[in-house]
Image (cartoon, rainbow, N blue to C red; front, side):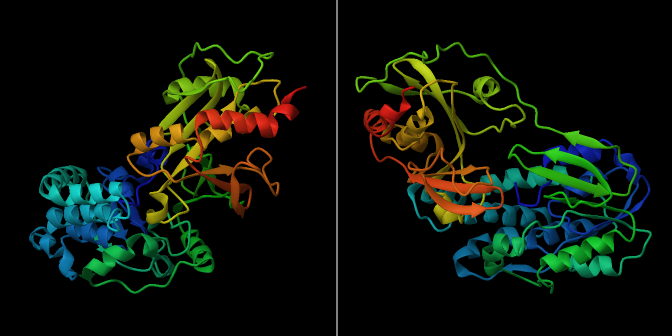
Length: 437
C-alpha cells in the first residue's frame, strides 16, 4: 500500500456518518491515497481533490481527465518506460510498485537484494495485479477537479461554501523524505510550495476553521471541535476535530485472547546454573491472555509479527513480542534490526527476573529465530520505555539508552552476544544474590 492511507478505524468512523456530506461541496486538501474520496463516493458531492505528491497527482489528474507529464529520467529505470507511456492506471500502478522497490534499492543485505530482485524479475505480473486492484478502487471515485496547490495557500483563499477536509502531515518535511528518491527517478512538473512548518501548519488549521472543517491531530490540541479520539495499536491517540454534526466517539483497539495452560515458575523455585532456558513461538491471541493477567489495566494490546513465550526448566516466566522497525530510522539501518513491542514477566517474588528476560533477548538462539521469522539480519533490538523519568531501571545495565524524548526513552542492544545458557549464568552472577528476599 502506498503511504498516505488513513487508519482503518478513522476511515470507518467517518464512513459511519458520511451522509453528513450528502450533496455538499468538499475540498480535500491532502488527498494522499484518495481514501476520503472513497468514503464520499455515491453521496452526490462536488469533490475538489488536491495534493502535491507525484503518486496522488497521477491519480487525481487521471480521475479529473487532465493530462500530466511523468517520464523516467534515470537510465537505470528506463525499462519502466513501456508501463509509463501507457498512462492512466498503468502508469499509476508502475509508480506504486517502484515506490515499494525503492525501499530495498540500496541492497545492503541479502534480504534487500532478494526483495529488490524479486520485484524487478516479477514486475510484469505484479503490475497486472496492481492495475486490476487500482482500477477497482478508482471506479467508484468521482471528482469534479484536481489541483496541485500548497494546502496552506489553497485554504487561505477557498470560498466559504466548501467543506474543508485535510489530514495534514504530522512532521515537517514528511512528504519530501518519503518521496525524494521517487522524484529523482521521475521527471514531472512538480508544484511549487513551502515546507509545512509548525507556523504554517497552525495557519492552515486557522484557515480551515473559518468554514466547515474536518482535520486530525496526533496530540490533544485543547481546542473546541474535538469529536473523536481514536486509540491506535501503537499506544498513540489520534484526535479528530470538526464543526460538522458528528456524534462524539472514543475508539479503542479490540483484541481477542485465548487461554494458555502452561505452568508458571513457582514462587519458591531455586534458580541455579543447571537450569535450562527455552523459547517457544506463540500467537497474539495467546499472548493477549497473559497480558490481561500480568500487565496494568488500560494498556492497549498491540499486535506484533512475532510473539514468544520464555520458559525456565519448563516453567513459563516471560513474554516477548517483536515487529519490524517502522518509525524513527532510515530504511538502511532499520533493515538490520528488530523492534521489541513488549517484554514482561509473570508476577513473581524473585527480584530482577525481568533482567533475565532481557538477557534472553540478547541470545544467539533468539536471534536465529527472529532472522528466520523476518528474513533479515537482526544485529540489534530496539524498544521504547514510556516514562518521564531520566532512565528506566528495567532496561538499565542490559540495554543502552539511545534517545530521550517527551514521555519516552528509546533503548537498544546488540543481539546474538551469547547463548541462552550463558544468559542464565550472567543473570545469576550479576543479579542472583540480590534477587532473593
